[in-house]
Length: 388
Image (tube, rainbow, N blue to C red; front, side, top):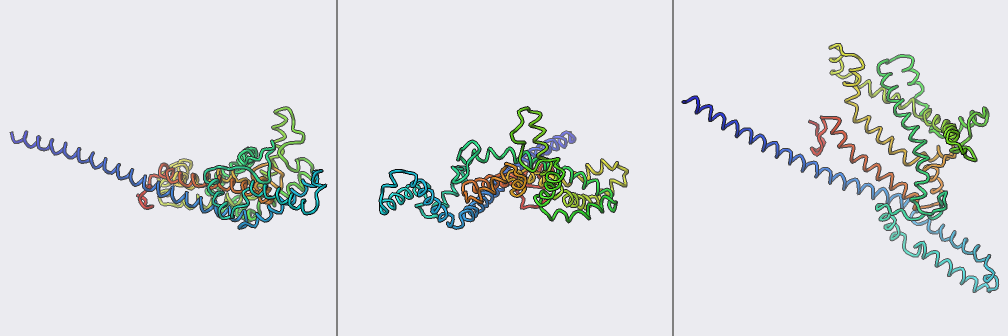
């Protein structure tokens, strides 16, 4: 009888313990969710504030604090005067009437562009339009189809940049990653010393090497085109068009790789060597595990957050294009468009490019924290940066 009572009490205590454990688990999940939401909200506020500040600084720089308005006023007056001289009715007016006629037309253009309002007011409008992606119309540049809409101008140039820089950056990323992993196993070899010796060549930008490549392969050997995206006129046949496109991509991609491959490989090699010297890697080697398994599980896996970060920013950098590289190779992409917009003081195009890049960067930074938590169990979101 006593045994039954004891077992009954034990069963009741066990049920109570299970319920308390479930309640504790629910409470912990709720607290974790609250921390996650609080962290996400603060992160979003900080990123939005950072984007807004960066965009406003871009607006101030692009307008040179309002100095561009004076240039635009002079340009408007000059264009109105040229248009007026072609009007037969203008020629019969006296000097005073001509001056009034030109001033009236200039005032109309000034109001049309909103230049009659103070710059500080218009800069706030620029900021509001930029943050809401109301890209508006270009002031100087036109798309290939003749449109002044900034959206159309950017969308026409974006595919060319994604094709060139997407190919170049992805080749650079994966070649350097696997070359660095290979060199980390062969420390002190001839290949390792060669990469170390050639790493300083990355101090020169891609367009610098591009000039020499154009001189050698286009001007001297005449085996590759000087620049552009395809031959002129473009081939009608799809295969011929693709072959022409590939030929035009060879020099800019080669210049991009020469400029960055050795230093990037050296960085990854050093990074993998640091992780390869950890105690848990030595323990895995002592157990006799295969080298490939050790690299995949004990070297590559802990470095996944860094690899993902690097790859994410490689993808984002494709949007902005390479201003000087695209200009040197006459590649019709975002970089060349940005160069032309800066030269023409076309504020809407400059701001639109910066805003879209800032948004892509902010979204990536926001998502990376959650990706880190997925690939690395040591990371905990919303706990003040501490790792469990």
